[in-house]
Length: 150
Ligand code: SF4
Image 1 (tube, rainbow, N blue to C red):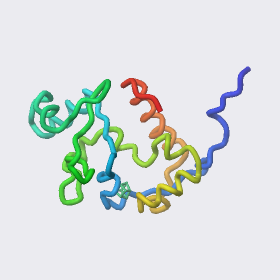
Image 2 (tube, rainbow, N blue to C red; image 1 turned 90 degrees about the vertical axis):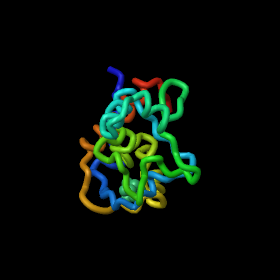
Image 3 (cartoon, rainbow, N blue to C red; image 1 turned 60 degrees about the vertical axis):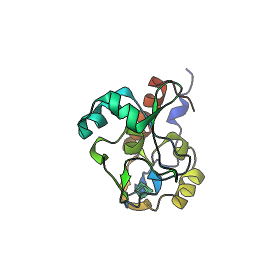
Image 4 (cartoon, protein in one colour; image 1 turned 120 degrees about the vertical axis):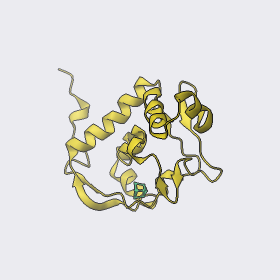
């Protein structure tokens, strides 16, 4: 039988500490891109009580296969107001799963590097390995379903 490489021990086998301190840093990264699916656009439009078509016109730009949220000139997400996300309850999966993205979980070094951006790394409760895997895999599933590859 071919060994399942996904079963090899991970540096986060014992979980990772994380707590969002609501600093907003991850929402205002120059060059940062938030990809959104049609379902997410529909949900955010609903929260703003507008049609998906208007939402796309006002707040999105087309990507190769789908849509991205617009950003201000300084890189801040268009929905970041007074350091808070005005669509927090309807925020896209990409935002919900940060910082447990596959690229951030590639190595312990990458995870530690992320502290420069996110002060919530190594703070708060321990997120266990099962929860980390769910968050990480949901990003992968979203990206492959929308034709995005790492
Ligand atoms: S950078 Fe980290 S602590 Fe700051 S808002 Fe984002 S997730 Fe929360």
